[in-house]
Structures are given as structure tokens and as C-alpha cells.
Image (cartoon, one colour):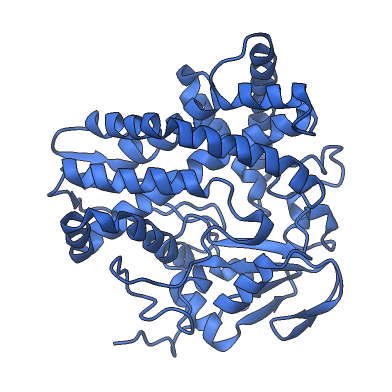
Amino acid sequence: MADDTSAVKVPQGIIEISAFVPEARNDPHTPLKALREACPVLRDEMAKTWLLTRYDDVRGLVNDRSHVRLPTKAEEGSLPRRLVDDDDPDARRTSILFLDDPDHARIRQPLAKAFYARINKMKPEIEAIIDDTIAAAPDQGAFDLMEAIAVPIPVLVIARILGVDESRLADFRQWSEDVILGLNPMRTEEETARLMSGAEALDAYFTELMTARRAEPRDDLISDMVQLLASGEADMSDDELLLNLQALLVGGNLTTTDLIGNGVWLFLNHPDQLAALQANPALGAQAVEEVLRFEAPVSATSRILAEDQQVAGCPMKARQAVFCSLASANRDEATFDAPDAFDITLKRPSHVAFGGGPHICIGAPLARIEARRVYQKLFERYPGMRLAEQELIWRALPFFRGLEKLVVEA
């Protein structure tokens, strides 16, 4: 039976469908469905931001190369503009996440080429890290899957790829949690202080590491990149490389942690789907895509209009920000059959969990490798795993979706 959304209050603003609101944090999909059906293109005047919720509109916007990302290009008072401090001399200092062409292409292309070559070369080592971490988890009884598996695997994998000191993994995870607050437009003064502290620590660490790799190269991505800079094959400054290596560290562990946790939670809540995966491991790749569609780690992305134009049938103005609900688009009834059913056996249209266009997630191939291997090996080791009785606590970071803790019983 289809959900009855007739009694659901249609959200009037972006905050109402974000993790700031406890009800939406626990269940973002019900209010998003109401919004998609009643007001698929919403203008939030308080946030000075548009919101798109339909698949075709979202996909069209993220794939349109005419739009920009740099927050300083957005109108005053809009959500992206709130990400930066006008008094900060480093307001325009950013990674490829928010850079626009030609700078975006200049930096992303050599970085992505080196990153993907390193992933391909290290795939057996990546799988060994995953296997060893799962093997080290408790043999039986209750344990927190996030703490034992979902958190350590991604941070160790990206640390190994980059070539950072693995004795500092706890620091890297904490710095990542601090720096990701830069994507919270409503952060508090305390959170801004955490952000700045984490950024300073990462700057200092990566500056030292790049110097060390220039003096004594190793078999890692940082060595690859400083050598590309030295040869002139990569046209970027040390500071640009520094920022983007940090972005790989941060993005490479937080969102993949949530992809692992969300997927395990979904499989344990849908034993028929877990049974299908266990009976046919060839469904592994399709299973990862369904997790990404159904409960993606990143729930929204944004673009800034470079000129006045029509978007999703509505006239919009230059410098206006447009948020795209990836979570809503991925459950759009007009695109997906039975969109609210978690079903790894269905061949579905492409989701938009990784965004799209030139800014499509650079870490998508690595996240897919990690998630597929974790789902396979975890349920091989624990075929009878089940969820413990617990109150689930979802992360309160807006526009992200992941569990703080997931207690399972082996």
C-alpha cells in the first residue's frame, strides 16, 4: 500500500527537511515526498535559496556546466554564502568541491588521474585492509558496527592511499569531523572554532608531509602528486595541492563510513534482500547502487546560477543558489518503480547520490569498492548477524545522512 502523505505537512523551507529538525533527521523521506508532490520547486526566502526535489530537475541542474559552485558568487544571505566569512582572507581558498572552471579542471584532472591509478594499483591492498578489519571484530556478542568496522576501514584505506602516518588515524578522523563543519551553513561559534582548529592542524600536517615526500618519495599518492608538480605535469600551487589532498582525506572517510553503516542497517532491516545477496554475490555491485539510491550519505548538493534563466520551469536570477535534494530525487516516483522499496534485485535507472556533471564525486569509485567488499565479507563472517534493540541516532550534520552508532549482534 502506498504511503498516505495527505496528512503530512508540506515543508515551507529547507531547514524543515534538514537534520536540524529531529523528525526530518529520523525520517527525511516523508516530508521530502510531500514536498515533491505539492511543491517540487520551492523558493525559501529566509534561506534565500531554491530547492529542487524531482529527479529530472535535479539531474538536469547538476549536469549543467553553466552553473557555478564558489560560495562567494552567491547572493548575500543565501545558504552557500553563509559557508564563508567575508572577513576571512582565505574565503576563496577552497578545494575542487567548490572551485569553478578553469581552475576546477586544471586541478581535478591530474589529481583524479593519479588518484584512480593509485586505487587500481592498490585494490588488493584495499581489500586486505577491509578483510583484516572485519576479521578483527568481535567473534560473537553485541558490538558497535560503526566503531569496529564502518569508521576504521575508510580512514585507514584513504590514509594508506595518501601515505599519511597510520599512527595518527584518530587525529585524522577528528580533524575530518572538524573540517566537515565547513559545509554547515548554520554552524555555531564553537563549531567554527573547531573547524578552524582542524583546518590548521591539517594544513600543518600536510605541509610537513609534502616536504618530506619531496625529499624522500614513497609509493603513495602524495609522492605521486609532488612529483607531478615538480615535472610541470600538474599545474597547481602547493597550497592548492595541500587543500585537495586534505579534501580527499576528509571526504574519503566520513561519507564512506556512512555508506557502510547505512547499507548494513538496510540489509539487517530487509532480511529478504540480505538473503538475495548471500545467495547471489554477483548482486554486490547492484546492491551498493541500491544502498546509494535508497539511503545516500550525502542528501543534497547545490549550484549557483551564473545568469538569469528558467530552471525547472521557474524564472530564476543570476547569483541565486539552488539546492538539489539528492535524497528526494532518488525516490522520485516518476523515475523509479516502487521507489520506497529497498530492492537490490531490480535494475534501476542511474541514481544521483554522487551528484553529477564536472563536480560528480571524485571518490565514487573508491567508495563503491569499499562498500561492496564490506557487505560481502561482513555477511560471510556473520551470516546470522542481526540488529540489537536500540534507539537509532542519526548524525545531526545537515545535508548528510549517517548513523552515530549501530549495535549489532553476531
